[in-house]
Image (cartoon, rainbow, N blue to C red; front, side, top):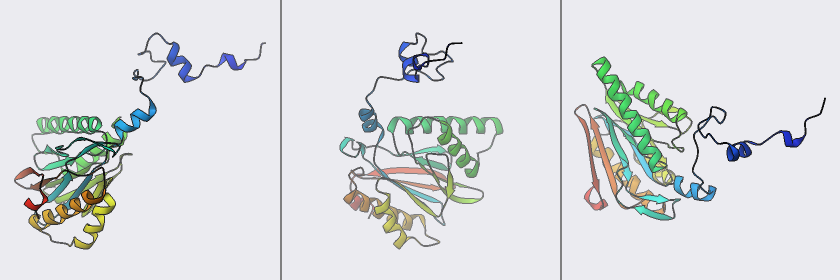
Length: 242
């Protein structure tokens, strides 16, 4: 019997290059665009700073307004990085813009489907678990959002890591400016904050990040969540909120 040679074994790349049917089960994936790896890094690596704080009144979320390519080029100066996904919950956008938008769109659709089927709002804990499952299983380019919401159990802030981990805390920060913002929150946060007090603290945390992090800037979006719903408003001038 002839012994197999190296030529008998093709690499995955060889099979992809010579295969006529890109949707064949043999490949196990959809065709990919011919994009240089360095270009892909520039597309996917975006900077930001997002903050979530649980309060006595509900939840406050704050984000900057800048979209950038790799933290080196500002591609948009007016990006709303926090979106309502539930009657009393919101999620931040961190990472690839396209990936984050797809993540929110899919998550919002599942929440609406749940509410239609059960005639009740999804609990924030269940929503956080769903978000973690989506982050773990979906091609969303390493997003790291913050989920904040209010339900019958109280106010909640969760950090959802790219591997699908779900961690609840009194406050959390994600994004390229997180170290700068965390420094301010560690000194300023205390139990029993009102939403107004938390918005001031969050705004100062975002401002600290904007001063030094090139991936963050151009203003702030503040999101206030209470039993009554979600209120989101943006400001290009920090003096308007401080």
